[in-house]
Length: 319
Image 1: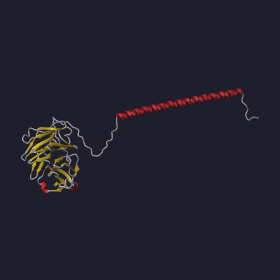
Image 2 (image 1 turned 135 degrees about the vertical axis):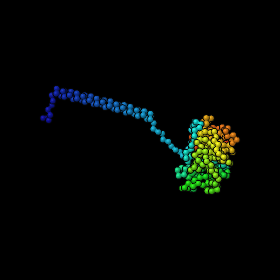
Image 3 (image 1 turned 90 degrees about the vertical axis):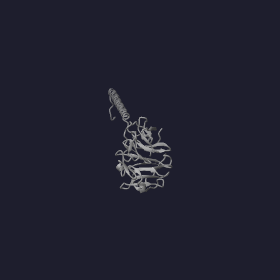
């Protein structure tokens, strides 16, 4: 006898219909679930795209700073400034510049400040195209007060050296490789001591400066010139005479004529004017240096009759 009795035909038919019905319901439920999952996935994608778009919009509106890279010593290009005539220029302590041209070598330096800012002395034998550092650090130089050539290839300078910032005059006979102290040179040097910038030392004697913060001293024969509150003054030992150049940043002698780098309405950047010794009240425009920023420390010199200005890292001539 079979283990299981056979179902009636009608019961079997009903059972088949039930199975089919349940299978259809299961398929519908599965497709509905898949449809809901698809809609949910599309919603998530849409929201993600929308959020990404907003994020990109924020990045465009508020960019991050671009990193800057230094590739060693760079030549600085000054930006001309239209400084109004009459603006007083005052060099920060330690930033005063010295620039002297000898027959076979050029010399330049920055003052420095004892115990605060290291001075720098450089020498060029190719007309200022390249410079060699000749600062006598082995002498513990702390500050530079003057710098001048005394032979075609050699120079002398007044400095402060050592822990006590002792005042000395140094000379080199080895093109700047070695320097030695010469007391007799100090006794005949002209300079402004940063410890007393209201006094001008003229070797054998000293005279009061026309202001309490004089700088930029240059000399020629019995003449000396300097800057006070952006104005040049000149003296032959018998008082000071102010010259009509405002916003002055540097002076230099061409013989007995005084050249002044200053601001003026005539030039964008820096003006160079000549004040003839015989008629200092009638200055003559030499030219303009449009790329020399008058807000920067500078030094003026004459080479082959042409004034040149050391500003930023460039030696510039007026046009």
